[in-house]
Length: 279
Ligand code: MG
Image (cartoon, rainbow, N blue to C red):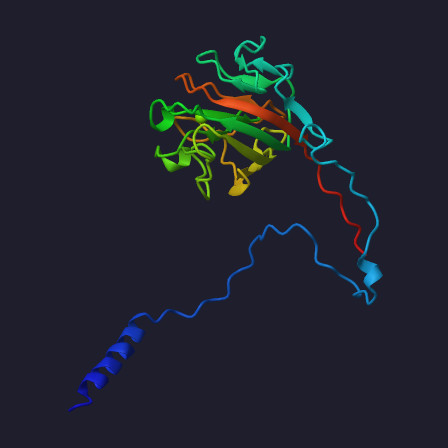
């Protein structure tokens, strides 16, 4: 009888195992994988040189050459003026504050500003700062935003000790993608955003055939990892997918005395990677 507990335990394990038994998996039918390159074919090279190429040679880009921006970047704001920007509502001169320290600050209730130029796929660098003097809470504490193609918002917000809905917090893709981390510096200090944006593609009938994507580093920390844009980023309602071509970069006036500042804004237009000739 002294072995009874052990026997019962074995029986219990066996019966549990029977309960969780699953049907053997059927072979899955082939599905689209998203792989776009073709398999290497033909006779495999036996010399290393057969798979080494010397062109096309990548263009040289000097980093840090334009007051910190790469040599091929378009400087959108360096503190000297609003030459690259207009008011969104009526395309007139920007009335936001131009500060002596090389930054600009949202002028409350004057409206969004946007670039005069339009862009497609881009790498964007932008720095922003919430005011050191804290006012209000939640979505009303230093709320602004960067709208790619004028449609897709990367949230700017002072989230320090200021919780809000996570898909609308700082560095979210507004109401679509929660950031992978909360990487803000202390309130009143400068944050950086580095963005890689690929615009959605539409066919001749205006139907979206390829989603846009966003990668975002917040102060050097990866917070959005090549996420798929589901469409526009409205405050109320679902994302929409109006067909569009190149569009401006817009900066938000949230209209609640948010007083967000921006500086050091530059952009690089992205080109498709050159194709590698296959052996
Ligand atoms: Mg916003």
